[in-house]
Structures are given as structure tokens and as C-alpha cells.
Length: 413
Image (cartoon, rainbow, N blue to C red; front, side):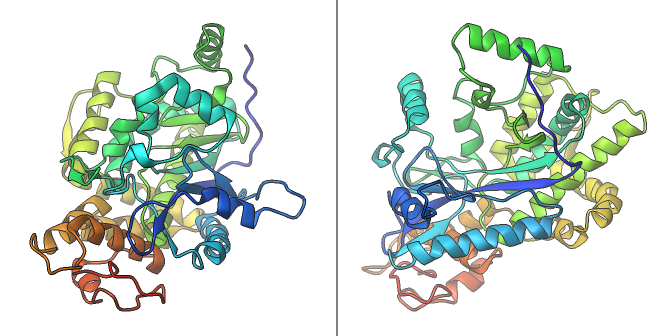
């Protein structure tokens, strides 16, 4: 089976941002994606070019066009957010991005009426129905398919760095899972999801793998290979799918810049004749688990010798290495946001701080801890940046917030 890799400009950029649709009064998920999609659809009945459907009716996905840098990608997403808000604000629906919704129950969610989603649920059953999860995908253009698998292999050595920064799914069905990213471990339960097979290190091996899966009925097309990092044949990109849902624009820009710079840096090292680093699959699997479990406090395996380092220390060194690339890609300011994220904590840490700030025996009508967590994540999306607990609590419940509409659960206890 021949797999054609699409043409793209080197280090061109695209971003996909999955958003949950949240009721402004209860904080629970709303099944109104089709209402949104119908409202924004072009007059000719075609699908909107940047606002897409997803597996569940509580979700819309925003996608950029082909962009040259991070700033252009963020501007593209801003326009899509504004378009969606024209529909959702009158419905009293808020937008939220996190790896999971803190308290909504998976069994109450409706699946989009589309054949490919029906087939997925029919095959995967209980695990497929659990996929009430949200993520961010970043595409970076690669000019030659011969570079793709070596770069993916090297990107995997930075898997825990990337996941730890984005961890935003500590809660599931109203309970703290004790994981920083419950989403990462949920998603890998699907067939063909999870870490790529590192032994697939050449294009002919990839073609053989896909041919085997098609022949045995595992998949019908390459799009059903749901690896955490994969080639995107259609776009001619490496598609990085590690991130949990990212709660705000500032951190989205930072992690997009990190991905953009990392792929270009590795591509340059290939051009210089270097052999890119790889580590054994048993180390990769352990690193993924450690990052999902411990997030920013993970001790990660950094090389084939089994040397270990605190992930934030490893990130500090990586940011220094990427700084010259960031300057050339015009994203130095955005990349600097990674250091800011490390300083103020990842989303899962902020969510837990908000939950801990809510009294266990609140006054009648006061939000529960999980409602307060949802409110904080919604507010971060509205404001486009991370919010410390002190700032979140400064806005009393029931008063208008940044969204300009009242909600009994907005802004703390």
C-alpha cells in the first residue's frame, strides 16, 4: 500500500482546538454543537471551514488555515471564537477547554449523528463511550516524507515535557483521579491510539503497517491511526496530538510555539547530518505514565542510558536550546510563555487550588468545588490567560464577570 505524503511548506503551522460547550447556569455540558454548526454554516450548505463537528454533541473544534507563524494561527482562532460566541452567548452557553470536564457524566453525552462516529462507538463500546475528552493538535509542515519518522521518533523523547505542561484533566465524574492528565490514559484505550510503534522508522515500514491493518479490518483508512504523534498525509505535516485541552489563549500560544520550534530544530539537526535521539519504547511508555500521573512534578527518563531529571529542569534547558529557532520563527514572546506557565503552574494544579479553596460546607446556593473548577476554567478561556485563585475568588458569585452575564456559579464562592 502506497501512502502519499502531502506537500506543505517547511514549518508551516496549523492548530486544532477542541472546545466543550458548557451551560452558563449549571456548569454542566450542553448538547448544542449541531445548533452552533447549523448557525455558522455558509449559505450554500457546506461545512464551515474553521468550525467543525466532533464525536460528541457537547463539542466543537476550531481549526486554523495554513499559517506561517504562531501569531497568525492565534489570530485565526480568535476569529473562529468570535463567530462561535455570536451563537453561544444568546444560548447562555460558555466555551471551555480542558482535558476533561470536571463533573459531567460520560453516559449523559450524545454522539454526533455521523457514520464514522457510529462505527467507532459500535466497535469500541464502553471505552468508546468514555471519550468525553478534549485536546489540542498542532500541525507543523515537513518538506520531505523522509524526515517525518525520524523527527517523530525524536519528538517522542520530549513527550513527557509536552504533556506535563498541558495537563488539565485531574477530575473525572466529580472525583479527583490523582492523575494530572486522566485524558491521556483514557484516550489510549481506543484501538490504534497511544504511542507510535518506534520500530516503524521508515516510510516502507509505515506502509506495511497500514496495509496490515486495512487487510485485517482494523481500519479503513490512515486517518483511523490515532497515534499521539502521527504523520498527517493530507496536509504534509507532523501532527502533534499529545496535549490535553488548553484552557486559555496565552498558554495555547506558548505550547504551539514550543511544538513549532521543536520540529524545526529537529529538522535542522537532520539537515546537519545528525542522527536524532531516540529512546526505548519501555522508557517512552514509562515517561507517558509519569507525566500523566505527576505532571510538572514528574521525574522523566531523558536518554537511552536511563538518566532521569525533573521535567521542569529539562524544560528550562530545552527552552534555551530553542531560543534561536524561536527568533527566526517570530515566536520568541510566545515561547517565553512556557517559562511563565512553569512558574504559575499547569492547569491541573490551578484546578486543584480552586477546588481546595471552596469550603466543604458552603452556604445554600453556593457552588460546589467542581462547579467552581468549571467556572475557573471557563473564566480563563474568556480572559485568555491563567488565573490565580486569588483573582478568581475576587469576583463574587452571582455578579457579572468578564462575560458580562450573570451566573450563580461564576467567579468563586
